[in-house]
Picture 1 (cartoon, protein in one colour):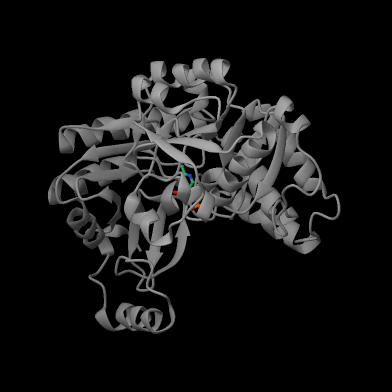
Picture 2 (tube, rainbow, N blue to C red):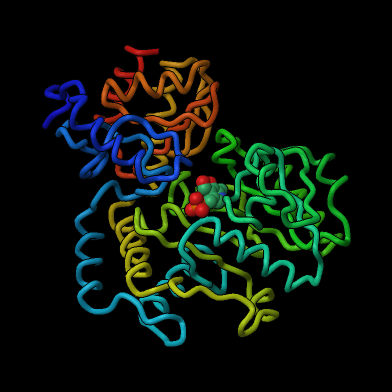
Length: 391
Ligand SMILES: Cc1ncc(COP(=O)(O)O)c(C=O)c1O
């Protein structure tokens, strides 16, 4: 059904699913009142057949859009061959994925897991093991995940407070402040963990001087630098990884989200020097790096290459950024990781939903736009016109 044929949601169909959800799910999520059934490219379809333009992409996940035929085909083939063996054995897609990642990340060795927060946990553990030190330095506005370690380096107190005590010691320096960073790092620091572009914090791009200082102080104190590229990775910002905008190579890199374009897969990449100090039994995952997940990641990377989606993210990112500027009078971010300041952001998300447009608010005053990397001018124009009509 075309968006022009969309009809207002039928209370009874949608509401009855919502009621069923409420009767069986822990209410951790405050969901929008829509039930999705299928997706294709930049579009999602609800249970009533309405079509929505998706500028959320499963929170910066569905890089290839929904159900890309090449990804689906690759998964089907792998499903019929082999899904899971555990890491007690070698499997081919895992080896091929690590080889491919070495090529596109410049990192040397890899470990695979199932989510962003697990990738961060692994990064933190690796840093303690390799340096023999305990302290982590993170930044105001950071978000690294919800498990205990990742939560410990996540800025928002609201997320951390109910679960204290967390991993200690952790110190938060001000994002983009070299002076603040200097005050927090020392010879006890195991790692500095930073998102080159903060995602959940509202799409805040790191200053070049600030990131350079993270590396200069590393020389002095000998800590590891962890880049959390969970949200920024796999073409999202118009380069393969956000680190490429800055020509910086971290000691440890966490990745997930876009990696499997919707299939849950995450991982870390480390330098050869770090890998040398790591050994058997120090970390593990039953499901991590299973053949199905690795095939999803391999197919995702291949399609990104074939369809030149890193370039498309850069090109369409500019088109979308300009369109957002036209509507909101401001816009920020890189590639297809964009945001605008706008009061009443949550309410605007609801209004957009009623106009069959999916957007996301990271706070009451900030909207985030992280569409599939396959987005084209046509969808951006429809989105711009819809937004102009409801702002
Ligand atoms: C930068 C960053 N790190 C880590 C995470 C946690 O990832 P996940 O939700 O897959 O555990 C997120 C999720 O939003 C993220 O944006």
